[in-house]
Image 1 (spheres, rainbow, N blue to C red):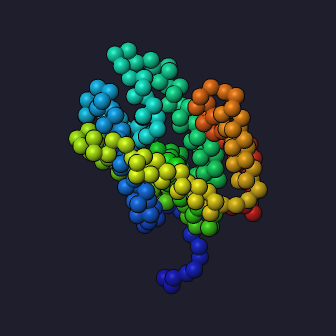
Image 2: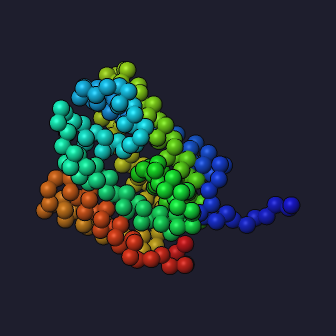
Image 3: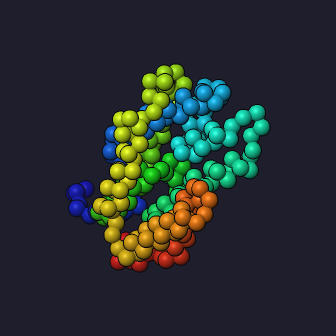
Length: 240
């Protein structure tokens, strides 16, 4: 059959697109590996077994939440406090899910939730940038997530063995890499009134919570505000 120039639908996902997303995310994933090593070392210092540490990174894949749970780890683990802490740290996924829904809704439930298993800040931002250019983004989301996940697990494994060599990435400015990357992705991503208002509402709620609510609650407040607005304010056809 003759080749056509028909653009791929934005919810398209296949092996090629996944591989493209994987390759695009590798440079960022290298830095993630270093933080994985720092987590592996911190978990070892908290008394966890290396096999359990690597299993946690493999099955949970939530770096900030994993670090937060180490402060609660001990002979008596406060399950409720631990669950609330993990929810608070990961509440931003409500906002990410809301912004991705216009494309995820075209997938069968198994594929939809399978893609979201490896959704993280960096690959979400890269996917939104692709959508903003009118290109398929779910393959980027899945492929980039697989890159981040594999390097995070590898970094955790290294941290249980030689993590003291990368105990703290701040002297090299590694703590700034992800923030700068996300800012660049958001600025160059999809631009319309709906997305602008969602981000402004999320930012405003987060700032108010930062000033008036308990520590770290601004993450939950911003994610809930932006996520709820994204779910109630449906995307218009001309915005897709």
